[in-house]
Amino acid sequence: MKIITAPRNIKFLKQYTMGHREKFGNELFYIPDGLDALDDNSYCSIKAQNKLRNLKSKGKFSIEVLSLQDYLGKPGDLFRALEKAKTIYVEGGNSFDLSRLMKVSGFSEWAHANIENPDLLWVGASAGIVSTTDDLSTVSVYDNPEANHFGLDTDTYDGIGLLKSEMILPHYKSKQKPWADGRHESDVVDSILQTRMKNGQATIPVHDETMFVKDLGSGEETLVVGSDFTEEQTWLDIYKKSTFKQAIPTVIRYNLLGDKTDCVAIS
Image (cartoon, rainbow, N blue to C red; front, side):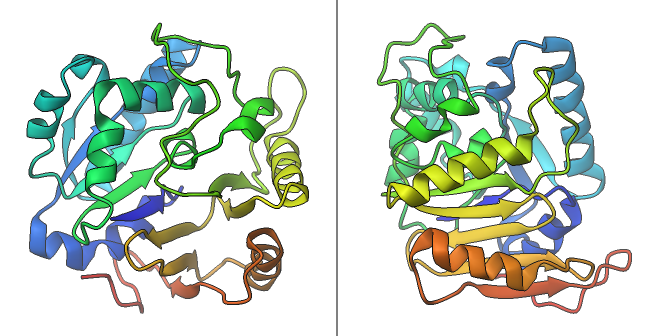
């Protein structure tokens, strides 16, 4: 399985997965449940519709919407529903609520059964990628761990553990507007990163303008950037400090002009 941070520019995802889709088709299973764990339902509904529109029009995916809430206590049904899945897109929301739902629905079990599956892509947006770690405790300054929108009783601070002792942390140096409480997302994410570094917890910070790919089978890591991305070296320096690694990921740079790119897509 390859896990991929959902890029702001959907064309990154389209181009990178071109070879994969030539083999397996354009079907993408979209899992929106994380948005249901947020309070502003009208905003979330609009966000989900916009995401689906972009995945269809810009990403050229064929979408199958799958709600994990429909499979609570029915893991066998979920396994059958995902039997032919090759690309899944897990929407963001509250990392704690989402990881609970993944466990109770059987989605976590299905994901672990597919770690060594080289033909499966997991695209995660925000909480949809954070929840893949094993320890969510440091994310409590970002998401409320006590919120329980789905009414599920599972461990509060545990993710689903596809990543062991490592976290992929999106929204690094985010340029979003301040939150309602006046905090800036980039400051909150940086505080999580600094805390994890002090604790010796490996962390991969990811810019919203980039796409990070980790192959759970081989351990291979790739950073996908656009031709206008200028912080590559700064990011690589932070990556080595925050992951405690000397080796660095392969960097692929896209020159997107319409649908053209000067990079090779995965197969």
